[in-house]
Amino acid sequence: MDEDIPGKPETLAIRVGHRRTHEGEHSEPVFLTSSYVFDDAEEAAERFAGRAAGNIYSRTGNPTLRVFEERLAVLEGAERGLATASGMAAILTVCLSLLKAGDTIVTSHSLFGPTIALFQTLARFGITTRFVALEETRAWEEACDANTRLVFVETPSNPLCSLADITALAEIAHRHGARLVVDNSFCTPILQKPLALGADLVIHSATKYIDGQGRALGGAIVGPEAIVTGEIFPFLRTAGPVMSPFNAWIFFKGLETLSLRMKAHSERALEIAQWLTEQPLVAGVFYPYLPTHPQYALARAQQSGGGGVLSFQLRAGTTAAAFAFINACRLLSRTANLGDTKTTVTHPATTTHGRLSAEARAAGGVGDGLIRLAIGLEDVEDLIEDLRRGFAAVEALA
Image (cartoon, rainbow, N blue to C red; front, side, top):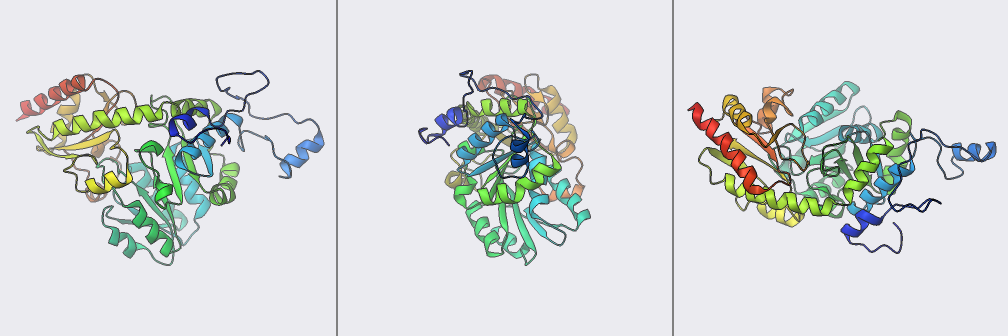
């Protein structure tokens, strides 16, 4: 971070990382180059040997990526950030950098479907995963043993918005010689700072709120220099799951408005969640900042807002009812992505969690009547009017 830049998040997200070129540009440039030219053979040799700093090849570093990495790291209160090709690439990079055959991951049933599938795939390489109930802190303690090297948590969870006590999990992980990794994609550093609560690493799907407009795929890892540069970067450099420079430019421009957007998403989502609790066809609403949420006190303690994602359970409890609701919506976008300015609606049991077994879905609380909304930035009354169409279609099925 530049020493003369003040430490408020809104300022940091706009000013950190840009080192103007000789052209004097005001907006940050995009360095669309695969390689870099050296002044002489001696300079090339020194850089490749690691004895001199400087660009070598865009798989190992790019000026545009560095702006994004520095901005995100400073917002999270981290020493170092790394950009990856996607959020899943970030998780895979952490696992393959820090784990070996015989090691164990402890995580929860309440995870994004592809993350569960990834952990199950790691079993082929001798890395075991134990799944526990997200909210039961004692279960995390009991699942850890001498082989546990990674405790991985997604909080709030997808799609039920359940929470884990990050501080408590950090203490458990460290007692067992493991590292706590937190997926902070739902809250972003604007609403939650896991490193300040004891986490060792933070993962992001930049595809979501960091972009904010559904344009590009990307991920990120942030944390201490010793872990990120010393242990994770060598794998990233060699294996190559890196972000494209153009996507990095999109993401750091997204960071400039992240604070404004997260507050607006949270305000709208809370209003929608409150309205849904009053609807007779709804059996339950899942949103951390609802006073009726069982972990409301924890949400208020470790988050500064509820975020833009919520889910609700239809009383009908069937796929047919959920499909009728979703198909009747005219304004909401039927897509599984989230974090967009456009509100999205999806049926987790047949989309994001559709490749999991029925048992795994049940363990994660993903039933046939569950619908997930990612509230965008449209007018709330317009969104409610569209939700009314969905409920009318469900009522017509009866």
